[in-house]
Image (cartoon, rainbow, N blue to C red; front, side, top):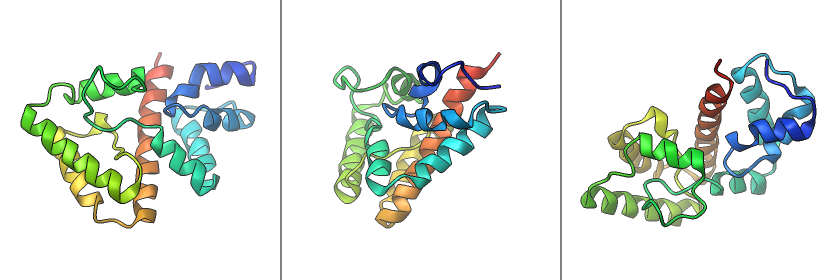
Length: 164
């Protein structure tokens, strides 16, 4: 069961599952208690889908750039840093870093947001392939895909948080 005594406790406990965007969890509070992580993410996902375009885009922009040089991004959250480290993105060769940097720049120029993927479910090679594939999508398709990836990230974070 996922719940808390107050909205503030709920946000304090779960607000960081969506990168720098606790309003999503705050808006889910009236629907608590949730039977489990999947139930809560279904609710938060609907809140995101019902949000206006600017809020959706702000959520995506709250995520860090993939494979950014570690130690130079003061906004890289603790959870994102651990996830990127777990995927080996903190140990890229110079050639890999240059390739990711070029893809990130092309993606940012096309969509005006960072590329988001659930790094815990992908290899470095799959991430590279996904950036290349997703560069061909329309802005609307890509925003929807990024939001779906964000839900996957939040689900895994919430499962970690609620595991007993």
